[in-house]
Amino acid sequence: MKAAPPTKAIYEFKGKYCDSQDEENPERDERLTLENTLWANTVLASKGHIFGLVMYTGGETRAQMNSQMPGSKVGKVDLEINFLSKLLFLFMMLLALLILVLNGFYANWYIFYFRFVLILSYIIPISLRVNLDLAKIYYSYCIGNDKEIEGTIPRNSTIPEDLGRI
Image 1 (cartoon, rainbow, N blue to C red):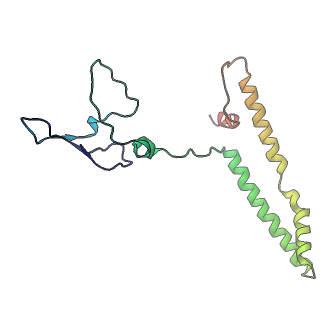
Image 2: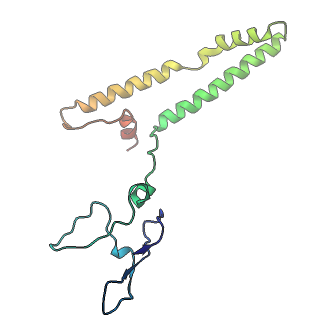
């Protein structure tokens, strides 16, 4: 049995079966394609037997080679709030620098800069993020305990946001 090395291409398979034990035709070769393969957990619909040969195991299987780490799911509202928070942080730092420049660079100017940064830190609304997260958790709790839609299990807190887009 010869086969191509393992690849990520799930719709391609090239192999060759050589039966050297056949007395009448010792050089009988059979070409193997994707139609000659069975995937993991395959169930046969009819009775009977098949003979198989395991080609690749572990990390060499195509299912394993094509698996990826799941991406992090972030809602659009969270992405927008993160962007606005970064923008406000940059604005706060630039505004503190502008105030420092207008005040003049005297001795210990970096202390004045951090004072202005602390004074202007109220520009970034941290309570907005906290309130939105608490509201999402509360809405998910209400959806999970609603009597009209029994059996509903909210698996994350972005469900109300996703339902609002439907």
